Length: 238
Length: 244
Image (spheres, rainbow over the protein chains, first blue to last red):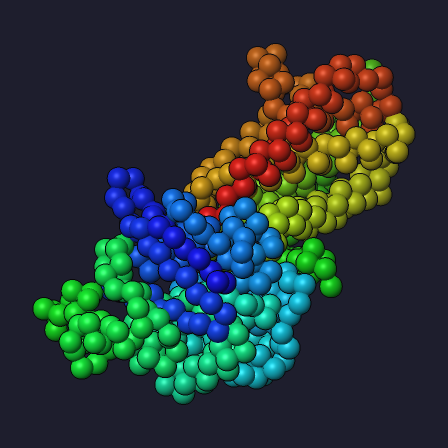
């Protein structure tokens, strides 16, 4: 297992934001965390990364605790947050250079820039990029260390169709090469294209955990989208 | 290139592109130095003149502006905008970020030091009576103490608003009540008691004695106070550093 989470809970005051979540993934696997806004997807990621305080029975990445062995673990784990902010006046090249300097080994950055359609933007300020370009840069930075495990929080929100397809293709290639991915998404086509397993959250609790086929079968629905709405309890709204 | 050098290069460029460091760190102390040169008496019949004594004070203003103001505000801004959160999930250590920021701000404090020294020396014929070696060592010690206070504030404040409040409190009280702008000697006795609480007052006492070559009265006491700032400041910063 490259990531093991066992009975993870996050409490804000008296409210349990995340309630006993467990999942694990192997190299080359992709798990999708699904749920409505506020269901606890980002909080789960923050807790797993050690940013948010949590209680757990087990929490290991690459066999180590991300909290106690932060520096070692994050040599090989990449993260793209839902909202990525950069220093004012930072250029694309400087952002890449700074991120490259953090790791012992790094990927071929010019190649990544090409893959992510950012060639020719190197001297631009990150601030002046379009939303989609900034998003692609954030994913690029998460992959710059050639990680074994990567967290992608809403990776294609704000991207156009072509850019999404391009990103999927890139991630699928990396997945074949053994990259494990934890992602959150609101797009079921994306989930079907990338994920082996899904975990549907509702108010911080797991309401479904299994493969896409299992989700469709258990719910008795025809599509993943309908199955998802069924589990997430949002059917009545549609 | 190593992480630290890359941080120095990139963050340095970012900070130097900003205008605040130029105004508060460099221009303000140099303008004040010129004013002091014209205003303060250079009558040294009873020991060192007010003008001579003011050199030791005025070279701390750039240190205050960059160390106690610039460092915490930059760190709080990075925390507020989630930039530190992104660094949290990388192998970088908080010390590397803090020291890189500190060194960059220090570079402008040193430019200000050179500027003020040139103004005093070239325009007003100031000569340091004491030994330059002892004086510079004392100055370095005071700088480390002031930056420790700034790093401590920057590491602990939860948000930008409190960063603003605490760094302003530290900056303005020390700017006005430690002898950096208004000489300690001219303050009423009551204010001198208050001034004795502020760490920079002790730094300026030491610097004055070193610059005039005077014997170190209460030297050990001043040194202990500043050393405490360094230990508590840096120790607290490392122990309680907040990424978000």
